[in-house]
Length: 355
Image 1 (tube, rainbow, N blue to C red):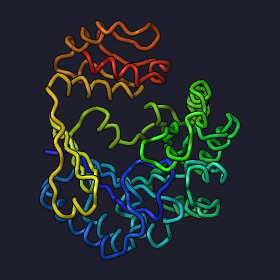
Image 2: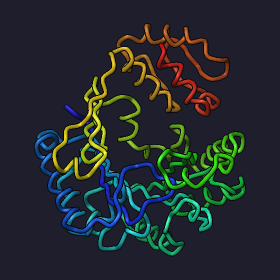
Image 3: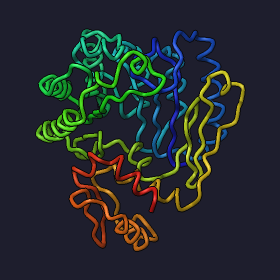
């Protein structure tokens, strides 16, 4: 049984230059209806009998859906504790917010930067006015409020980054997601930019450190490499994924995990609508254990003994990795990364996969 649900809305107004997530631009209502009919059919067949703990509606741009379709989706796909929807500022209207008001608990808005020059580099078509209008709408609603920002944008300085952080906090958020810009294969930014145009690793590390310090002073503590929250407002859905709980993904490219096997839906809306089955990711039980363990180390809490039946085996395997001093704390009851270890998580994770 799946404890959590992810729904991928593969529609956008246009493709952002940095984005590697699957989406299609310019869809008409008829195509959206076909997508929604299949989503709801799969929901009723696979999910509705036992309400999921959390629902995350991502994309793409979920709030690109017309009000009627948006409400139809959210009325059906309820959760026990947390329902999140992603939005872009320019697609959130008072009417759509009213349709969502009683069906979601958390909204995540992709701003990426408050500086129009940096948004232009990222291919974001959002205006400053649209951001202000969306914030005004959100603050009238009873939702938890997340803003996504990107750092490491070409030409961005530490002062620019601090200004983005300050402006996000001033919006009244209780959660922040701050991602380091990477050149993803197949994106417009990767095709038009050289690696020398992305900020160097030292500056990116300084920006990561600044985010932790600035947001902590504002009451939002880092609880995962890229995520910060006021106490009690952490994203439950994402935390469940990091800790290896089961989840079902609906929609093209959506992934599922049943506790031992992962599945990925086809990366094509038409193939998905035609019923092409998901691809199964087959790895042995030990590798799956290592994968789950590595992802849990993304969090500042790490792992505790009570979370693993075979804790002593995990602890012994981890200690045999002989990671450099200063990257982790490993005691009889807990394993977690230090701030330096979190910053170097990619390297730590690669080592963990070999346990």
